[in-house]
Image (tube, rainbow, N blue to C red):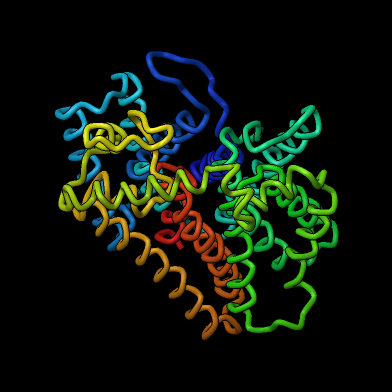
Length: 405
């Protein structure tokens, strides 16, 4: 019974994770599908402890996630004491989201028990990402005009967040594709990959474009064979996707970081570079504990920094700088160690599968999964340079998968 419940909930988790816009109702705080599913997962983990006597998965990552959570709590206390100019309800939403995503790490790490369950989760993530990509494509098709100011993320909410979730699902899709012999499944998965990549392109997320290219490069390097057509599939999809997009708004978006004239007109890159410079200043002003979670905007305004669009609650579009500025070294060190340990776990599974995979086919399949999840994780590491991904649920899901495998 618990096994069936676990598979059902993992499917719900996978489908709902990319669908960030699904708010069911508001009761003091917005209650989303993701938060409901997280609560159900928590109930399942508690049930496992009672019925199956399962212990918490032991991994050194757990300690550093707890340490990071402590620094987050300290950061929120600093923000409350100093005042960040953010409404109390909004600050409460930030706090609840922080607790939810970190809890999600522990739940994913402790729920998965078999490769079959992992495959259910990855398949469901592909389903959710495909639906999200379709909603983006349809929204763009229905729009009279698409510009950098009118980008859409469909049911994936904000376009950059949607792009982040979609590039992860793209790697999961190919993980399933290369492990099935069914022609029907391969066809369905290729169709899903094409749709997801189309969704990535239509988000007009420059960070997602760069990350997809980096993921493809790592993919080829991981397998070590550049002459096989299958490694060119993402590039083929990319070329077809670009050909299908109305050229003007896509070219304008690409030109915004390849052309000095377009960059000046768009101004978003210059603005973010200015924010990043001020984030370094914020870190230097309080290197141990930072200026407080969600406190950068208020700090910048108190210091007399009047960049374009500066306001309380301003996000730093670089996850590493955001943690450094808002949580200081006490937050940055655990954060970097969490990422390092997750990478190490994926690499360890790959090495063991490479050595013993022929004798144990199941281990070989797990190694393939770990390889592609690591590629998705690498894409996330690249996105960290351009997006405030620390509070992305899917980012902590990847760390949870690294602990679970």
